Image 1 (cartoon, rainbow, N blue to C red):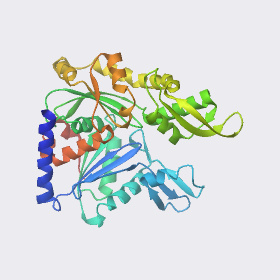
Image 2: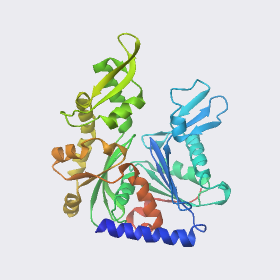
Image 3: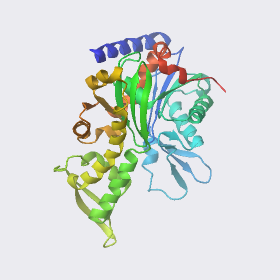
Amino acid sequence: MMESATHQQTTTMARVLSTTGKNLHKLVGIDLGTGRLRIWSNQDDEIIDEATCLAVESYSGKVVAVGDEALAMRGRVGEQIEVVLPVSHGEIARIDHTRALLRVLLQRIFRRIWFWKPTMMITLPVGSSVATRDVTAELLYSLGAREVLTISQPLAAAIGAGVPIADASGSFVVQLGSGVVEAAITSLGSIIDSESIRWGGDRLDQRLQLAVRDRYLLEISLETARRLKHQVGTLILESDKEMVVSGHDLGATALKEVVVTGSSLEPVMSQEISRFERSVRNLLSRIPPELTTDVIDKGILLSGGLAQLDSLDEYLINRLAVPASVVDEPEQTAIKGVVTALENIEEFKRSLGYATTRYNPV
């Protein structure tokens, strides 16, 4: 019932915006992830979903490709082209390249970039420093923002999963990204407590790459390791999943194909997942008594791309003895939360979390 009411409210608000103020008050939402960048605007109500990546000419710095097109160049171009991943562990590592990437993608929405002046909301890890938030805000103002709001990724994910912004009951959400995993307790539009680890899908890719090297004597690319993670990676020891992969035979210095089984990857998968399981367990032990019943009733909400790992919810239920479930379209949950917050901006501004999200132009 809660999700239905929230969806109805959001839909109604979106219709009002699209018919009355679409060209008067422009809104832009950004989910800035280590691996994926998602941008929404009320100008077209579509979500741009691209890799957080750009390719530039090494000698001139000119941008030659962005997003998925740039990522596809990784390992396939010479030294004259540099493929850049400007976000690390959920935070901006290379500000000029991040600005260039955002500028190109925003220009797909706004053709005349100097005249739009939108309110912009961007996700950041809940553990981000004040300096990081300030740098991010300054970056968005330099791109033409009229007002900048930041929102923590777990809070955005909770809202995107259907938790009303002003809901006084507690929710427990785990946002599993490619660069950072964060668990958070939310209530009244704010983070009550949280745990963060600088670990995510990228580290798991690297560990799977090493596991294939050690077990099969095969050198595979990170992209192949990523496909293994999603197609045969599992937390079930008896899994019969398998996948044919190709790479360099370390024994013969030649190319070869091998069949990689899910059961052979399970030990690495379980070892890595246990890292954030401990953080979740720590946070569960700190739930305020007033919110315990709420959290147990709703269970742990799993969002982010890494939430799609095979049997992750069952693994956590068995280990933590608390209900857990993967939200619908987990990789899109955070940007959906940003959209809902922007479309209900006045309600969001009345929430407890708003005080730490607003930035004035510098």
